[in-house]
Image (cartoon, rainbow over all chains, first blue to last red; front, side):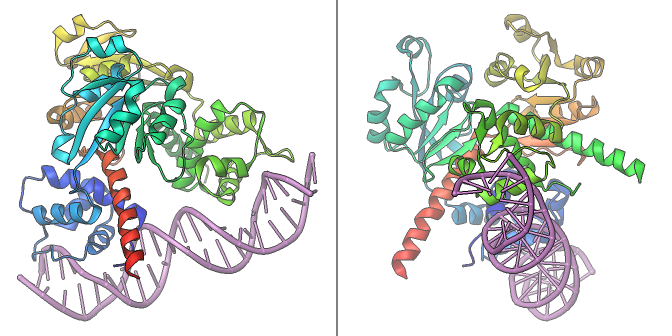
Length: 213
Length: 213
DNA sequence: CGGTGTGAATCTATTCACAGCA
DNA sequence: TGCTGTGAATAGATTCACACCG
């Protein structure tokens, strides 16, 4: 199989969101274009990487397509994760629905403050931070949502890496410095606002340039 | 000026995070490579789009570089935003620090439940959802953090668009269907976990393939 | 026909190589 | 000498065009 380009993976991942909620049985590449802005060519090409029989004369069979993407991207394997840092954001994720249905099992929560752990009610066991290494290896936890304050993010990330974690979703607004073998995805509301602001700005500048021409 | 490619914008945006925290006065493209994994060539090329004098024989002047990126990407203009949906996640963002220092002003919070609004303590004024259109236009709010439950996301997004919002950071795990002129950035913990899982999987498959060869 | 599947062509981004500057 | 700046070369992703299938 030709190796799947990075952007293709990102799009297929997003596509599953649409497939999950799609009410009808079939969905054509043209409809996906209208919904996402990606050209129907791109979508057909993306789906062709799956190398499966998914079409039916009038579009893709939604269920089969979704299953094929899950299979190709390895989303079928159940994976365990933990939430580190149980402030407002972290405790919000402790109680977030929809992890389970996506094949992710929340196995533990950690916080530096023993007090905080005792106060919080949680559907999963909570531990003080010093037990991180032990708990992560005992339950074979592979992924972490890092929700500690900015100051603590780097040192906590290092502890996670030492404990054998394989991927981190970083909610703290700092760039983590970890080995290249660890997968990090940054999620910062501020960065997202900035990304939109940069685009609003670009749009305005284009308009100005167009006026001058 | 040659138009700045999309990926360049993303990288420069991320780079500001590193610059903000960098302790020294100078930073070379080689150091950035070690920190981010992007090749020093790519970084120099990216920075060359800024068309400014930023080097000093031994690397870039951190402060100047940061300022130049802010200028080029239009991050200097103060922009107002609101938080829509004040459940656990939304109320966590009401109290998030670091928006202000990045040039974003939180101007309002909205929730469908009047009760909830009265209970919450908040540093900014809170309104019931039916006042969204009025408040957004009165305060010239451009951006929104959408933190409502999945079921309400689409209809709320439509109200935001009608109210004149220009960009949405969507925390609800659904793909929004909005006009192409509205900038949407999706932030879903589940999707980030999936993206990491897909990569873990790819790594394993490569290992297996390598064994076979 | 109204769709998909896919090599080939085009367009875009990254990498290279080396000139030039402190 | 060490590092940036940038046109040119390479690699990579998207788009196209058309064969093919239900």
